[in-house]
Length: 258
Image (tube, rainbow, N blue to C red; front, side, top):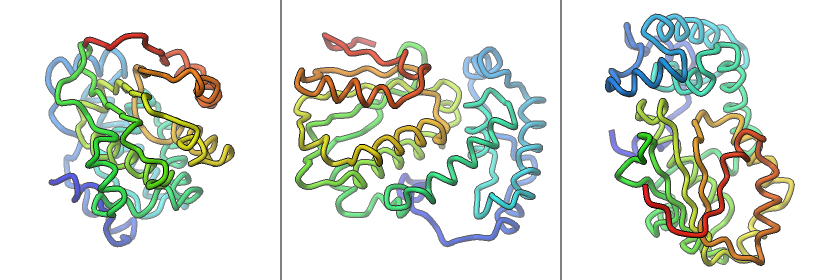
């Protein structure tokens, strides 16, 4: 399946139809041995816990009045279970937040189409992209180049959609769900114009809801070439994340070598 096929939203479907399309015995992909070991050690995941939790999660979703038109395949549901270390109640809450985010900020989270001209141009320019090689811990590395985002051409909606589509596409790989992600941001060229793309309230809402609802294991966040004039803005943005994520922020004085 191509990236575009993964990202473009299809027509609305009733939950019953979605449920009926879950293949029998769909309990996730066969993972590499090292990934299975990591899943057991860090996420308490084995074949039994995975099948049991998936069944409980699907049963709840099929009966919940708050869950409509939602994927029930293993790949999608496992990302919520894995990010919450197979606590079904916590995975349920994360899924509800994921769905609520799309309703709260529809202009940022809906119409996720890579072929939308402005989003296509931004992503094609190299604003955000995954590296081909993983880091030393097996994590997928996502690179961000702030200089590729022209604040006079693109909007915060273009920016957010580029992020969400990249994340959603990468989460289709279950190895990424287990190992997690390393983020590397080159902030060279960032200016006040970039900051004013967002209103303070909308930025805070997007960051807080995004962290709590998008089922990604954020393991490291590195920032390169942070301009002194926007350090205060960086500190303010950092404060909107949870303490756990803030501890993983690192401002680098030199280029990283994996």
